[in-house]
Image (cartoon, rainbow, N blue to C red; front, side, top):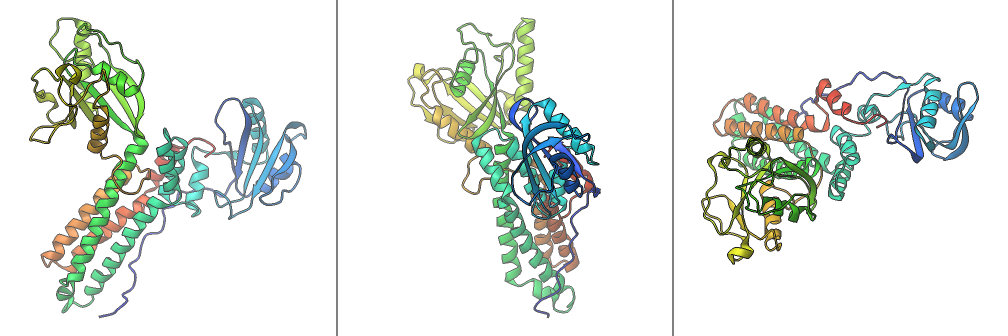
Length: 459
């Protein structure tokens, strides 16, 4: 049996049909600012620099100059920077013109660049070129957009870790282990008389166990990364006057909802965006659930039920002095029961012992006692902040990891049952393909188009 079977072929990175032309766009946000940047990438960079900046530019040196239009008229004064290929963001020749940040002057400067044969870039096209030219893999390219759109310091730090390749390295480490196992399995196919015994060795099962554990760990960390990027929707539901609005105000740290002793005060949804220990949260206060003849309140109750059905997590708020059950309509929802008004019941606050029912915490929204236990239970329930690496991830990454784990499970079953090695090898190829789709090694062009279309123009 050969000690080093040939490496199975892998697909080349998917192409995107990018033309070898020069693109340009305003790279800074719309509006007024002290500085604005026009970014240019492609083969006409030197021509643009000579025409607009009036000179050839040395590499990676800031040059102060006057920017001019195609008639030679002055437009602005600022800094020009040239980054020759391949040592640039896109891997092509790149020019940055840094002028004053007014919309009119930036548009005039962009028009002067376009007059030299450049075209307006599509959304995300600079990052797309960086991906196609091997400067970033697909997960890193997505992290660029995540870093720009970060809603918290934790999200920004997680996106930066992904941009620096931490997530990609974790994926590729598992991918390499799968590749080596594929080599092992496919080598056995060349020796039909010995293959079954070869694959029945304990080392194969040990490799499968290691890969399965690594996939499960990365899947757990990626779920936390998705929450860091996308946040979580939490609905506050319950009967009237149990303290839903008081709890919203307590978690928000300010008076966002009206609190009275009158039942039915909240009749519509109240949305509040906040951070809970670094977790982006959309908290939604809802109308009290009860039978009513009031048509306005009835509509509020209907919206409350709909919001509870759509939320990532439901906080069912109850008065700790009353005996209350979980409504049947909420039984299947991700749920935490909040026993509120502990300051009136006199009971000890904190998370209650686990039993057959839903997770429960006792607290007082009025005094704040027990709120830390609730926050900890929220994070635990949604899977945020678990031990492990912190990076941003996307829902497509979760699906790819799930697909890879499922294919690995099928391969393990086939090998355990002594099925032909070809069947197990095919499942391992599916694992390889699922992991490759995360970093862009095996990604359809239409998915690439969708990903980069979500970027802003100029990035």
